[in-house]
Image (cartoon, rainbow, N blue to C red; front, side, top):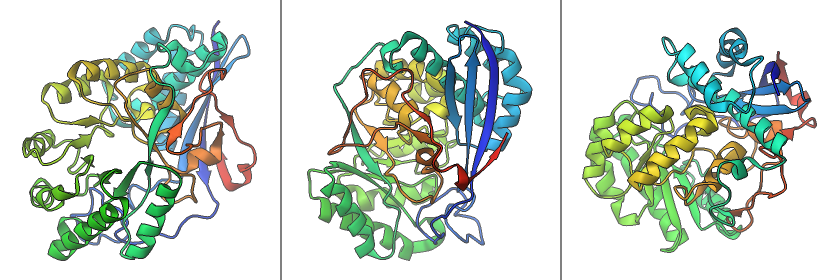
Length: 391
């Protein structure tokens, strides 16, 4: 079997979106003046869709969501020529070829996201050829179903609306929920008070038997985090996520040493080498790569094996089928993230408007189909009029 064609398309949403509002999530730019809408620089309304075709008529689907127009150019100009004519069963060779051929200017960020998209498509081909789900090729099931947590619950100064959304997840049977922090260093003591009020209100609603995670999305400084963590420690959080920017590894180490609550990160880290350093330095209690960023499935399984040796759980960012397949095949992943299907707001929601086949939780658990082939997803056609598609 040979790869004969690679097609990269950018799906840009032109349909209705949720109106932006201030302080619904922190971000790394919050310490700068003229903040404006929270998450403005991180909001994305485009997604890259990859189709890798073979001479046997099998088409593998891959994707990435970081800077999709740039990722498409990297694939069209540099990566696709490297894999056309090659055997998709040689995924390790193809990964190394893409990684090493772009190492002078790639290694992390958008280039690695582009490699991830192609690698995911290659694994989709491998599964379809074998007539098995991808997780069967990775070692098979390590659990009957995937426990998952509801991940939305953006900060809201209207506590009643905030708690109404949270109650909806509890009513659906979720036993774990992640909320976003809306205020950071630039908002002073009043912002700290609002953060504490929301965490306290959510814990009071959930009671002691529901896991609560808090997402900061790189919106705090180390000094601010040192002050905030003791104030929220009493609410028994499963973890605090990305309290500081990903390059501040010493900051993560220092926050872990405070031993107040688990510290999570890694959504913006890449490849086995990046996570080796983080694990050896004991920077995280929880690893949160995304398979469509970290280097694809080929890289993700290596990170999982390393994390297992360090006894650090791997709970990938965003859920979605490319992550669920990997989580099912490793004991390193005790729980998975799930973004509720919702109107387009930040951009993660676009996955559900582009692909069909992604599982919906039942009482907080996701089941994967043993008889699916490859990733088990396909392209939707019922929302095509809501996208501008760039080929």
